[in-house]
Image (cartoon, rainbow, N blue to C red):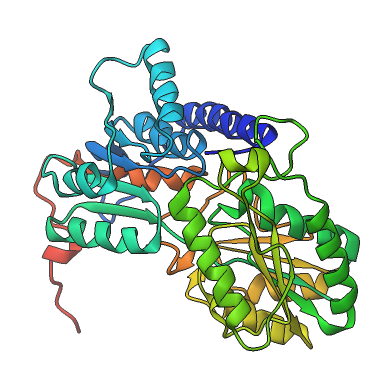
Length: 408
């Protein structure tokens, strides 16, 4: 998909880390014991497998995200059918081959390939598949959720984001610029956690914007296989069209300024890929489409604010709730923002990208449907709870729900 070498290596490393982590959790599929409400009775709960799980994964992390779903599903005792994105099936194929080489029995991990409209539709509607786990667009997520609801299947959705970095007037501006550059243009902006909104206090707005634009202009664009390249191509011509349409929208929205970028590169070596310049819009207002809708490309918007409270209001003022960040040297401001921002992930003095495998990953509002991936929380997706009662009294004991006692 054009990812630069250092990021591609990280994609594989994430799969390795996820595998080690999930393997350890196989010895910690904890239930719990608890006192029963009656004597001579033992009560506990345990986890059990869901059954056959359908995993539908995206193209932007073609090995990491499949591992997030596949490894916990296996550890919980399930069998799986996994469908990678049609743009990037080879990474998932290599992951499945690694499972085979490690001794996973035939039929436990099943790989199918094809478009979402055909193969994906078949998976979501198949009566034998008890659970669907999807990472994809919000539009696709709604379709999958509807199909699962029709047959009462379990559905776990990880969808879009419109993530914000808040840069306060006491921030280390240089550090904030580096975080914004990495968050906005890493993976060519093709991350659900991408920093597509930069909400900047007016006292440092001009300084931050100038340094941001200078750094964006200096980024090296090219073949992802070149170790000197910072920003690779976007994934396909459809993505080019979507991104360029949003750049046009930004240029036509009243007030926004195209500070740098905005062009597709097509000359010379650029003719062999889908290259778009890192693009920065300044003087953006929170209600503009480029500040509200997910672009999924190397485009970010700089939004001026007068206070932390306004920054929080702007950050929360979108349909998504995946990731957010604040740059500040004031611990009180950091905790205020951490408490009031309604997202599933929050960073202090770091970018909106870079989640770690041992913490839950996911978001609020239009980003998901309440489930989380990674961390121990992912086990709740791929397992079902079973409560177990053992009565060793040798006689019938009715639980309180079935044993009305006289009052007074």
